[in-house]
Image (tube, rainbow, N blue to C red):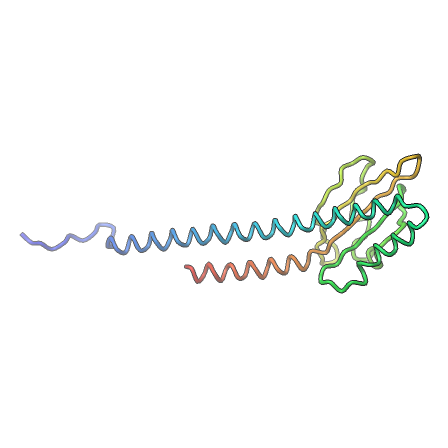
Length: 184
């Protein structure tokens, strides 16, 4: 009788199979963690953008209810965004009920024409959506504000250029692919 071990029918030793399973399960774990981190980052950006848009809309809504200083305050609030040199561009537009612009960030009509956005009905809930215009991606919040007491209604549109966020996420995604490749 010979004491030689019989060859494995699968063609690989137990150590090789365990090593392969360890490598595969580690890669799947790294893949799951990087996917969750990527999803969390993208979701966080969307939530922060929505929160900012809601705050900006609330300020514009409050300014619409001023009477004597409304024009000056609105022009300052809307113009303030175009004078800041932040990497994130914010565009605001206030329209009358019949669609005429009352206040608008300079250059907004060329960056984000009003025809791209579907008109809202009175009492329609506000919504946030991504709109592509002129090579830029905007997160837009629209709402209809009824002034009450027989005063006209207004439509407020606030848009946030999410190009900076998209670039950041693309860079992050590239880094995650490098981590996955190194992990593999």
